[in-house]
Image 1 (cartoon, rainbow, N blue to C red):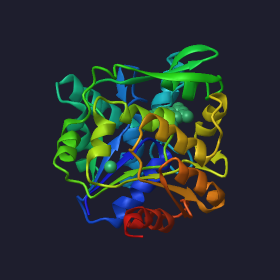
Image 2 (image 1 turned 120 degrees about the vertical axis):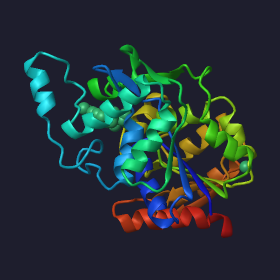
Image 3 (image 1 turned 135 degrees about the horizontal axis):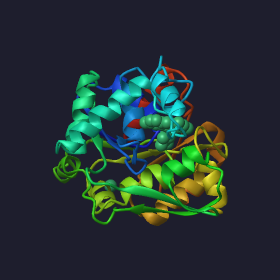
Length: 315
Ligand code: FO1
Ligand code: CA
């Protein structure tokens, strides 16, 4: 098995952890959204890459859903005393990651090389790829105007009503060349789209030039896990965004989004047991609906869902 997973933040990282622990070392490659990235306090922050790296390294902070476990906040406290900007909280240990990344980028290394080194230093055996080495920056169009993603998400706590998204730089950004080459060579036996936010985690990846068609046209089946379960997002603003975009807040609404924008891409659409009644409507969209327990609280549940994603083609 050679698996490519697409992921954004926390929900996606959970399934990636299951895949990482299930598969032999080196057989999982992960393509990660970088539309959430931004420059802050002079540092290059890549929240989704960091969430994934920390999760796979077993060092993620489970309570916060971002950052490192056992974190301290001395730098933020000192910065606050200086009257510096502290709305985006960088933990003392987390800052080391951003310093490392920022310095290496300034020295001329690209984001893929820096990410590979971070993964190696954290003893991660899966291959972690940024979706692009060029800047793609998600802008949220809202009733408070156009907001850079982290301003919408962290500073404004996802409160503004959204009416669309754009991804600055996406036309000029090259999709990760290593992944494009592997897709062209039909390297992967399976593609898994993790349960991440369709609009701000997966869309930016799929909208990179040539990427979604390369995924559609490779021989590997594409399995997607619904990020919406029983009308709710497990984590994050996906459900709120769907409601504001007037998309039905269901797994069917998610399936329709992908069927409309990326026809022929998704082969299997895995929904939770609680949404079993949506299966027929999803099948009518041309996606093969499959039903399973998709809630991932324990490591065992993450590994079990990973196993199921890889077994779908056999059933
Ligand atoms: N999320 C927050 O809600 N508040 C924060 O202060 C915050 C800081 C932060 C620092 C580094 C990092 O990599 C992520 C951080 N996040 C924070 C998480 C975050 O940016 C979002 O969860 C993602 O962008 C959404 O996927
Ligand atoms: Ca295909």
